[in-house]
Length: 149
Image (cartoon, rainbow, N blue to C red; front, side, top):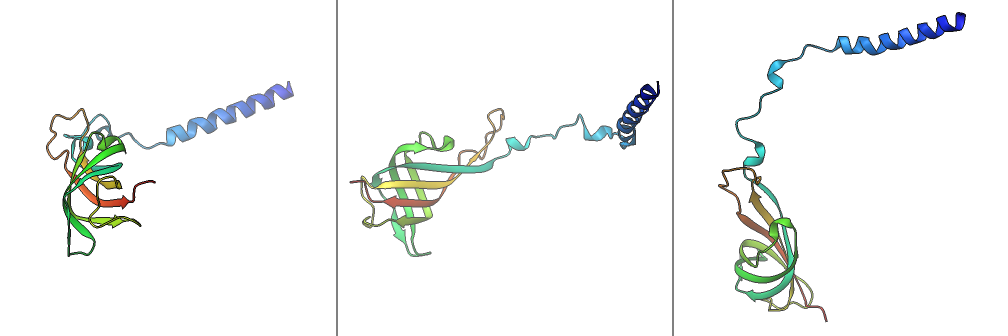
């Protein structure tokens, strides 16, 4: 009988310890739940990474003097691999883009040189009806390497 009494006291204390913090919780604010913003943040244009690897087909960009190592113009690339957002792209417009030429690469680069194009593209979620501002590509860096032998 004494063991049953002690066990009952322990169970009652445990139940009370669980119930008291739940009761101590502050009042629920009706305005914080059930409302959604007028437009989803996913529906505003935001920038995501843009990376493409491949080889140079044509190089129409010219080196500009300010700042040193930047190029302007159009390049065409055979894309061999790319992240999700860069799939299907072959032509890139460089505008004050930093270009790093690897060892053995001529100036300007020629067809067959390996290339990595890095930048950002603005995007919105697929479910959004307003796609304005999406699809703007800004190339920030280009790495050109000599072709594999």
